[in-house]
Length: 454
Image 1 (tube, one colour):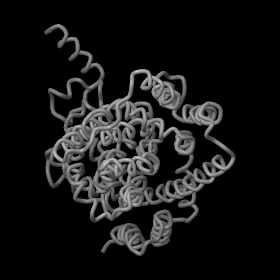
Image 2 (cartoon, helix red, strand yellow; image 1 turned 30 degrees about the vertical axis):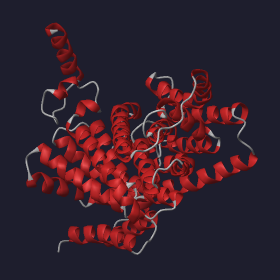
Image 3 (cartoon, one colour; image 1 turned 180 degrees about the horizontal axis):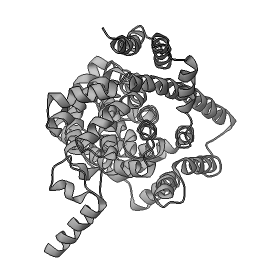
Image 4 (tube, one colour; image 1 turned 90 degrees about the horizontal axis):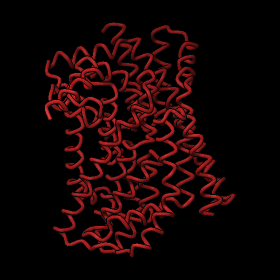
């Protein structure tokens, strides 16, 4: 075996071996990187520099702020207001509480940007509420867990920031905007499935609210929902960068929860700060070690070798994207989402770009693939949290999850092969090859021709 092959075996094999014996991800990445560097006679100072450079980004500063604002909103009582507002919107329909679960996750995903935070917050009282209304416990967990996937699609998604860093600095604003339509399509698909299941199994309808009571619920929820306007409106409008908008959102969330909702005290603030620091420490360690790991992958030419191998299997972009989707789905079941984004983006993105996939479109494909992974055993952390709240085993929940898996895979296929759903400016994508990039000029010309024909 060549020196390069031995290095690849030590790096990837060492990482997988350490993961199998349950070594924490950050340590597994760091240890395998250091041992590989020693084998290749690379100075360890270089590995240390790569680890520090992984954090040397102004964009990364948005991550702790988004984690903090999500924790503030969770502890500050925004979740129950969002759930009640969702119940006002769809509760009167058959299976309304299940549909309200999906709507509440859509709203909360636009604030927290985290699937796990969604399940932990929304699920903590919606799963018991659905059980009290007569929904099966497994079904209640399945709805909550799968609807939380919108948290990784609908801005502000922390995982999109990881992708932007791993991809070399893509614009956060474009990534955020690209996630809206796929997120809403996923929401609508899950709501339709909940309605079908409700009709089939005779699930109960939810509460009916008077018009005035509904307005009162909307008024209370809109104060918290304005956080989304601050984050997205500020970024899209050019008022803030992603980092600045996250910092402003933190200040706004504190003011709302302390002075408007009056739901924040010193104990909660202490718990929020402690939880945020614990999460951030884990994220920082993973980003640093994955940066060194990614550098060694590049040094050993693993991305180019893998790209050549995949491209040698087929010349069809559709076949290649199917293979990439299957790879992401399988790996998403086995590893943490953030780690996979940081490791796989430098490897798979060049392949996608080579067959004509826009980097922003590929971001949405990757988010949805790995989002399905967080609610799939054996390592689906959102599924574990949901089953813990619902008091049911993962084995019993799987049967209820199967229709939802099918729905999410259908949405994944739509997002993959119809780029226009993610890239709203690429109108001609509906009529041309699905993986053929188009410039803004091409899209503008298409619009003018379409208007002239109409």
